Image (cartoon, rainbow, N blue to C red; front, side, top):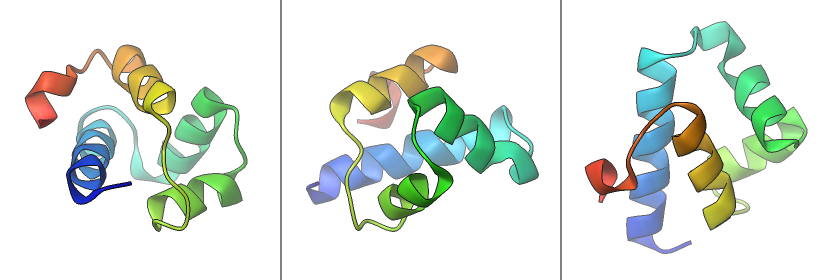
Length: 71
């Protein structure tokens, strides 16, 4: 993922985490939403693998966020 994509992804996840999900449930909620394991999610959060565009769209739709806000 390029630098802009990583910034957008981080912005979306930080916004979701701070506004919608209690910290202790954040990883569980996002991994369930995306249908991936928590270890798979950790890989994405740590930059070892990238979020797909469809995963970002799914997160934005679930939490009613606009990609325009983060670009």
